[in-house]
Amino acid sequence: MRALQYRIIGSAPEVVDIPTPTPAAGQVLVKVTAAGVCHSDEFLMSLPDDQYTYGLPLTLGHEGAGTVEALGEGVTGLQIGESVLVYGPWGCGRCYPCSKGEENYCERAANLEIKPPGLGAPGAMADYLIVDDARHLVPLGDLDPVASVPLTDAGLTPYHAIKKSLPKLVPGSVAVVIGAGGLGHVAIQILRAIAPCTVIAVDTSEDKRALARKVGAHHAVASDESAEEQILELTGGRKVDVVFDFVSIDPTTGLASRLIGVGGEIVLVGVGPGAVKVGFFSTPWEASARAPYWGSRSELIEVIELARAGKIKVEVEAFGLDQGPKAYERLAAGTIPGRAVIVP
Image (cartoon, rainbow, N blue to C red; front, side, top):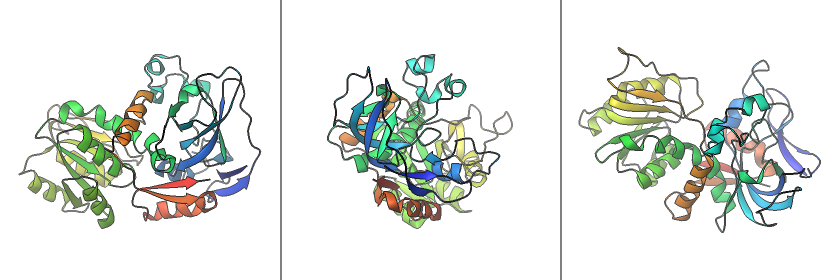
């Protein structure tokens, strides 16, 4: 089968031929119909040799959709040909977080060397994918896999981040979304669907600000030195309730820190190296900051239901597997307005 692999530190990924895997007991073989391209892939491929821990060669793709091709011994509850999405943050299935479906926070994954597909285990940018357990497959039904595959990360990650902030997003509240790209433009739609707040998007790109307005942001401002002034003008001088930072570099975390009000919350979703200083003399009273990771299995089901109801829609651009390296070039250049999807 063909696969898009990261093979040499510092080099671009390559399309190669590798053996088609066979599912062992408890595993499922999925014929891939779509795989999402993510900034997390770009991040890991930018790591120097002494910081890279994901193994080589690595088949990329932690967002996966496909049809059930074959079942390993003992697997039940799935039908051959069934359309599914792959829940990516695999855990042990036995610890307390896993018992709640929060495998993204599995307590034993590191010790057991359990790694997500595309982030240590072979990923979805291939003709076929081995899924370690049937519980990591969620029925997709009649939804388009190409349009839906980003829901497994670009939908799930912002949904998880937003859901925990809902108590603060009451009528009259203001949420700022920094970065209106692959995850940010979905976050805007989720906020409009489940929270009665005013949504202000911030981005350096006029195209992405236009996308933010298109998908429901009440306002979209340029991410420059005047961003803070523009936002406070929109709020009548009032600081904001929640900032969702999908970039998380020093300029954006600095903006978030200056914007947040009493009792507010800064949510660092992006994988950038930025940080927020929290303390008695550093943040307003009762303000807090957190850094969530991915989301739970139950939350993925909720995201799919939002998509099925037409509440959220990911802007996608499709690429063939052979065009995979080009898709990552476009991602690095910032010329993909929503989410790139590889279609084997």
